[in-house]
Every structure is written in structure tokens, then in C-alpha cells.
Image 1 (cartoon, helix red, strand yellow):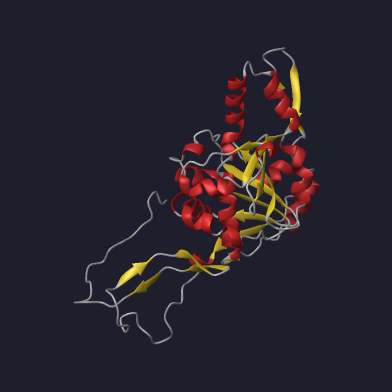
Image 2 (cartoon, rainbow, N blue to C red; image 1 turned 90 degrees about the horizontal axis):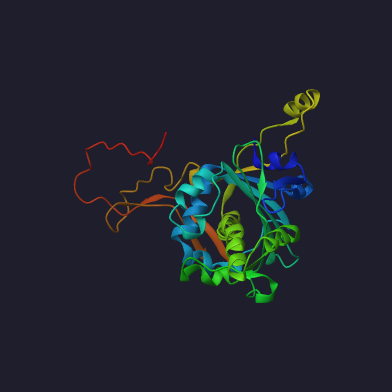
Length: 317
């Protein structure tokens, strides 16, 4: 089940045993945002390939990501996007800010933009088993045109200098009830900071990940043909189960058939450097971002390669 469907069916409050008082506390859970999820204008579901591409941008193309902030525009005033967290976690495993990320199968974010399309907030959700859902108590607020005021919340420290300018645009505050919960359980200011860091930490890398996704939306992504859920939802209603949410499944044009050469043309006809493969990559031209698909470049020097080599992706099934 998709994470958005788990949230749409989740209770608004969660029970938490208070070790200090022995009482059961009722704190806001993922279900507090279920109306926002159901009513958001568009819900995106990344496939594993585009998830890996966004993770690669956060990990290996940080300068490009930070340098493209001036042209970034969100696709909608409100949108939901979710992904396979096992794929992303594997690619970001050595990033310091992901060390506190809970083990989960799917993760997602709910983004709400202001009228400027340059500022807004996001909430982070995840599912550990594909059936239940959890919400991070942190609310990330960002303004891509100006650094956040320290009074607006807690600042996020970037894991390296390449991302610091990006992290300077975001501040974090906690849901008021969760904030009160952590404050009443802290024994000192240092203890409080540690508790807050533990609560906020897992959400830190979701901000640049969201920006990478938006840049890909601005470039070239294509929709996977939608599955008609009407018949399935009719059967679910008849059996007393809630309907599943409509959504847009996305993949990238880099995974569509490439047409680098015109009919009858050959990559060997061009004069230039030696023949080599250029991997797909994002390119910025002024105020536009587009994807340059993987292609051959150059000319062959010497006899054609006779040996057959089988190439597979690491860890491929």
C-alpha cells in the first residue's frame, strides 16, 4: 500500500506511554494531516530510478543543486511526493544527517507553498511496514529568497559547505504538542537540544531531496500510464474498505528510448574525440533546466571492439 493511503486511513492521535507519569498520552499522529493528503491537488509517486536520481543529486551534485535555487519554482501550491525509502537510504547511507533516519519501507513529504512559489513548509512521513504510518514532529519552513531568521525556529547545519547556502534558507519548529512533550522531559538545555536534534534530524535531508525532485519536474519527467482505480475502489467499498487515492506515477525521460542519431546516421561518422559514453546529466541554460540523456560521443580509432561485455547494475535482481 502506498504511504498516502496509509495516512488517509490513519487515526489523528497516537497513544504514547509516558514513562514519567505512567499515563497514556494522546499526541498528534500522521492522521492529523489526512485531510491535507486527500485534498492536495496532486500526489506524485516516484519510481526507484527517479528516487535514485534525486538521491544522487543530493549526494554528488550539491553545487548544481545550490546554484539552481534562483530558478526553482514548485509545480503546484500544494503537492505530495513519496518514494521507496530503502532505495534512497542505501544511496545516502554515509551522509551524517541520515544516521537517525528510522528504518522504513516508504517515505513522503507534504509541501505547501506560499503565493510567491519560493517559500513554504513541508512535513515528513514514513511507514515501517507498509501498513501503518508515522509523522515527524518537525515542521520545516523555507524561503529560497532569503535566509531564515533565527527567531523563526532552529537552524539546520549542513553536512558540508556545498549545501550550507541551501540549508540557510530553512528553519525548523516542532508541532506545538510535541514541542511541549519534549520540553517537559528535558532535564537541562543541553538535554533539550539533544532531544530536539533526535526528533528533527531525520527530516533534514528531505529538504534538499525535495528541491532535487522539483528541479527534475522543471526539466523532463514523464508520467507512467495511470492505473484506473475505479473498479478496484468499487470492490473495496463493497467490502467495507476505504478507497485508494489517485496519484501521478513518475519516471524520468532518461529511461525512455533515446534517439540521439537521425535515421541513417552513425555515431562513427562524426569527427572529434575518441568514442566514449556520456552518462545522462542535468544541464542548466539560463533560467531553464533540462536533462541530457546518456549518449555516445566521439569517433572510433582503430578496429571495432570485438569482445562482448555484459553490463549489469550493482545489486540488480
